[in-house]
Image (cartoon, rainbow, N blue to C red; front, top):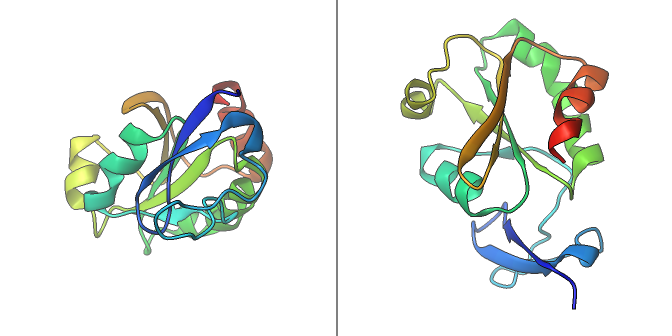
Length: 144
């Protein structure tokens, strides 16, 4: 029996137990039956953030951004490509700091884009500033 990994559904936020050796084999949510991995970042607001960062066994890479931010918009395609490449080893999410001002304040986001990695509710790493795909993959790599 392989180890079970807790994965939060990006659609309905249910926590699913998935065998570790089957993560990349098209796992679906037991509640809503949607794919657990879509190859795209998940947009989270304040109400969903805790569920994804605290209940998932996967590292959660968070992009704190705003729509008016030029560097954020420049980095968006690299972040999307990173989601395609890093799933199912990590979940990539985006938090719009204009809409989730409470989260931005709670985590002391002073500049955007700010990237942070969470696992089991704990922040493991943080960096500020836009990155290209290579830099982003290299930064996340040690936490996978």
